[in-house]
Image (tube, rainbow, N blue to C red; front, side, top):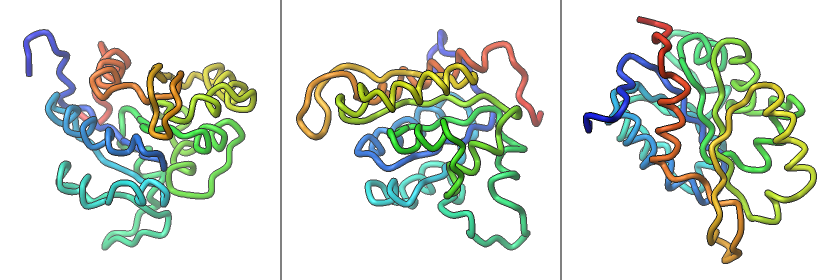
Amino acid sequence: MAGNETSLNGFELLLCCSGGIACYKAADLTSKLLQRGAGVSVAMTDAAQRFVTPLTFQSLTGRDVYTSLWQGSETYQIGHTSLADRIDLMIIAPATANVLAKMAVGIADDLVSTTVLAVHGACDILVAPAMNPRMWQAPATQANMTTLIERGVHVVGPNEGRVACGHVGIGRMAEPEEIVEAVAGLLDGKPPRNV
Protein backbone atom coordinates (compact mmCIF):
# COMPACT_ATOMS: atom_id res chain seq x y z
CA MET A 1 0.00 0.00 0.00
CA ALA A 2 1.40 3.40 -0.98
CA GLY A 3 2.08 5.87 1.81
CA ASN A 4 -0.67 8.27 0.75
CA GLU A 5 -3.40 5.63 0.58
CA THR A 6 -5.93 5.40 3.40
CA SER A 7 -5.89 2.04 5.15
CA LEU A 8 -9.16 0.17 5.37
CA ASN A 9 -7.84 -2.25 8.03
CA GLY A 10 -10.60 -3.57 10.26
CA PHE A 11 -13.46 -2.46 8.02
CA GLU A 12 -15.94 -5.05 6.74
CA LEU A 13 -17.42 -4.25 3.35
CA LEU A 14 -20.23 -5.91 1.43
CA LEU A 15 -19.80 -5.63 -2.33
CA CYS A 16 -23.05 -6.32 -4.17
CA CYS A 17 -22.89 -6.97 -7.90
CA SER A 18 -25.92 -6.58 -10.11
CA GLY A 19 -26.20 -7.78 -13.68
CA GLY A 20 -24.25 -5.58 -16.04
CA ILE A 21 -21.16 -6.09 -18.17
CA ALA A 22 -19.26 -3.87 -15.73
CA CYS A 23 -19.26 -6.87 -13.35
CA TYR A 24 -15.80 -7.66 -14.67
CA LYS A 25 -14.57 -4.45 -13.00
CA ALA A 26 -15.99 -5.63 -9.67
CA ALA A 27 -13.33 -8.33 -9.49
CA ASP A 28 -10.61 -5.67 -9.78
CA LEU A 29 -12.46 -3.54 -7.22
CA THR A 30 -12.51 -6.47 -4.81
CA SER A 31 -8.78 -6.96 -5.21
CA LYS A 32 -8.05 -3.28 -4.62
CA LEU A 33 -10.21 -3.16 -1.48
CA LEU A 34 -8.44 -6.23 -0.11
CA GLN A 35 -5.05 -4.64 -0.85
CA ARG A 36 -6.10 -1.69 1.34
CA GLY A 37 -6.78 -4.11 4.21
CA ALA A 38 -10.58 -4.31 4.10
CA GLY A 39 -12.52 -7.49 4.70
CA VAL A 40 -14.74 -8.00 1.67
CA SER A 41 -17.82 -10.19 1.36
CA VAL A 42 -19.62 -10.41 -1.98
CA ALA A 43 -23.29 -10.80 -2.83
CA MET A 44 -24.47 -11.32 -6.40
CA THR A 45 -27.80 -11.15 -8.20
CA ASP A 46 -28.74 -13.97 -10.57
CA ALA A 47 -28.04 -11.67 -13.52
CA ALA A 48 -24.58 -10.77 -12.18
CA GLN A 49 -23.69 -14.47 -12.13
CA ARG A 50 -24.24 -14.58 -15.91
CA PHE A 51 -21.27 -12.21 -16.33
CA VAL A 52 -18.87 -13.33 -13.58
CA THR A 53 -19.00 -16.54 -11.55
CA PRO A 54 -19.15 -16.58 -7.76
CA LEU A 55 -15.95 -18.66 -7.86
CA THR A 56 -14.06 -15.59 -9.09
CA PHE A 57 -14.98 -13.64 -5.96
CA GLN A 58 -14.57 -16.63 -3.66
CA SER A 59 -11.03 -17.08 -4.99
CA LEU A 60 -10.22 -13.42 -4.42
CA THR A 61 -11.75 -13.06 -0.94
CA GLY A 62 -11.37 -16.56 0.49
CA ARG A 63 -14.99 -16.26 1.60
CA ASP A 64 -18.28 -17.78 0.52
CA VAL A 65 -20.19 -15.65 -1.97
CA TYR A 66 -23.83 -14.86 -1.20
CA THR A 67 -26.12 -15.59 -4.14
CA SER A 68 -29.56 -16.36 -2.72
CA LEU A 69 -31.91 -15.63 0.13
CA TRP A 70 -32.29 -19.39 0.35
CA GLN A 71 -28.61 -20.17 0.65
CA GLY A 72 -28.08 -22.75 3.37
CA SER A 73 -25.42 -22.69 6.03
CA GLU A 74 -24.38 -25.03 8.82
CA THR A 75 -25.34 -22.42 11.38
CA TYR A 76 -28.69 -20.92 10.45
CA GLN A 77 -28.69 -17.17 10.16
CA ILE A 78 -31.00 -14.98 8.15
CA GLY A 79 -28.57 -13.87 5.45
CA HIS A 80 -29.68 -10.36 4.69
CA THR A 81 -29.96 -9.30 8.33
CA SER A 82 -26.79 -11.04 9.50
CA LEU A 83 -24.85 -9.32 6.71
CA ALA A 84 -26.31 -5.96 7.72
CA ASP A 85 -25.27 -6.50 11.33
CA ARG A 86 -21.58 -6.88 10.59
CA ILE A 87 -20.67 -4.53 7.75
CA ASP A 88 -19.34 -0.99 7.81
CA LEU A 89 -20.38 -0.13 4.26
CA MET A 90 -22.48 -1.63 1.48
CA ILE A 91 -21.19 -1.05 -2.06
CA ILE A 92 -23.30 -1.81 -5.11
CA ALA A 93 -21.05 -2.01 -8.17
CA PRO A 94 -22.22 -2.22 -10.82
CA ALA A 95 -25.55 -0.67 -9.88
CA THR A 96 -27.83 -1.26 -12.84
CA ALA A 97 -30.95 0.77 -13.62
CA ASN A 98 -32.95 -2.21 -12.36
CA VAL A 99 -31.31 -2.39 -8.92
CA LEU A 100 -31.50 1.41 -8.52
CA ALA A 101 -35.23 1.29 -9.31
CA LYS A 102 -35.75 -1.50 -6.78
CA MET A 103 -33.90 0.52 -4.17
CA ALA A 104 -35.96 3.63 -4.86
CA VAL A 105 -39.31 1.91 -4.41
CA GLY A 106 -38.32 -0.68 -1.79
CA ILE A 107 -38.67 -3.86 -3.82
CA ALA A 108 -37.00 -6.74 -1.99
CA ASP A 109 -37.18 -9.79 -4.25
CA ASP A 110 -33.60 -11.11 -4.08
CA LEU A 111 -30.68 -11.16 -1.67
CA VAL A 112 -29.19 -7.84 -2.81
CA SER A 113 -32.41 -5.81 -2.79
CA THR A 114 -33.49 -7.34 0.52
CA THR A 115 -30.13 -6.57 2.10
CA VAL A 116 -30.44 -2.93 0.96
CA LEU A 117 -33.54 -2.63 3.13
CA ALA A 118 -31.93 -4.51 6.01
CA VAL A 119 -28.92 -2.17 6.19
CA HIS A 120 -31.08 0.96 6.47
CA GLY A 121 -29.77 2.86 9.45
CA ALA A 122 -27.02 0.31 10.10
CA CYS A 123 -24.42 1.59 7.63
CA ASP A 124 -23.96 3.77 4.57
CA ILE A 125 -24.65 2.58 1.02
CA LEU A 126 -22.45 3.56 -1.94
CA VAL A 127 -23.68 2.91 -5.49
CA ALA A 128 -21.64 2.93 -8.68
CA PRO A 129 -24.20 3.20 -11.51
CA ALA A 130 -23.45 1.47 -14.81
CA MET A 131 -25.75 1.35 -17.81
CA ASN A 132 -26.40 2.50 -21.35
CA PRO A 133 -26.31 6.34 -21.54
CA ARG A 134 -29.96 6.49 -22.67
CA MET A 135 -30.97 4.40 -19.67
CA TRP A 136 -28.98 6.72 -17.37
CA GLN A 137 -30.70 9.81 -18.84
CA ALA A 138 -34.18 8.26 -18.72
CA PRO A 139 -36.53 10.30 -16.52
CA ALA A 140 -37.33 7.25 -14.37
CA THR A 141 -33.65 6.59 -13.65
CA GLN A 142 -32.97 10.23 -12.86
CA ALA A 143 -36.01 10.35 -10.55
CA ASN A 144 -34.83 7.18 -8.82
CA MET A 145 -31.36 8.66 -8.32
CA THR A 146 -32.84 11.85 -6.86
CA THR A 147 -34.88 9.77 -4.42
CA LEU A 148 -31.87 7.69 -3.38
CA ILE A 149 -29.61 10.72 -2.89
CA GLU A 150 -32.31 12.42 -0.79
CA ARG A 151 -32.35 9.28 1.39
CA GLY A 152 -28.61 9.51 1.95
CA VAL A 153 -27.32 6.98 -0.57
CA HIS A 154 -23.83 7.95 -1.80
CA VAL A 155 -22.96 7.85 -5.49
CA VAL A 156 -19.70 7.52 -7.43
CA GLY A 157 -19.95 7.99 -11.20
CA PRO A 158 -21.14 7.17 -13.73
CA ASN A 159 -18.43 8.38 -16.07
CA GLU A 160 -18.55 9.48 -19.67
CA GLY A 161 -17.19 7.22 -22.38
CA ARG A 162 -17.92 4.28 -24.60
CA VAL A 163 -20.07 1.56 -23.07
CA ALA A 164 -20.29 -2.11 -24.06
CA CYS A 165 -23.16 -1.61 -26.51
CA GLY A 166 -21.03 0.87 -28.46
CA HIS A 167 -22.85 4.03 -27.40
CA VAL A 168 -20.84 6.96 -26.08
CA GLY A 169 -22.09 9.09 -23.20
CA ILE A 170 -22.53 9.09 -19.45
CA GLY A 171 -23.10 5.58 -18.15
CA ARG A 172 -19.72 3.87 -17.67
CA MET A 173 -19.16 2.56 -14.17
CA ALA A 174 -16.57 4.52 -12.22
CA GLU A 175 -13.14 2.91 -12.32
CA PRO A 176 -12.23 0.66 -9.38
CA GLU A 177 -9.65 3.20 -8.12
CA GLU A 178 -12.35 5.92 -7.97
CA ILE A 179 -14.68 3.62 -6.05
CA VAL A 180 -11.93 2.70 -3.57
CA GLU A 181 -11.26 6.40 -2.96
CA ALA A 182 -14.99 7.01 -2.42
CA VAL A 183 -15.05 4.14 0.09
CA ALA A 184 -12.00 5.52 1.90
CA GLY A 185 -13.61 8.96 2.04
CA LEU A 186 -16.84 7.61 3.51
CA LEU A 187 -15.02 5.61 6.19
CA ASP A 188 -12.38 8.22 7.01
CA GLY A 189 -12.43 9.09 10.70
CA LYS A 190 -14.91 6.35 11.58
CA PRO A 191 -13.97 3.33 13.69
CA PRO A 192 -14.79 -0.12 12.33
CA ARG A 193 -18.08 -1.39 13.80
CA ASN A 194 -16.83 -4.72 15.00
CA VAL A 195 -13.39 -4.00 16.42
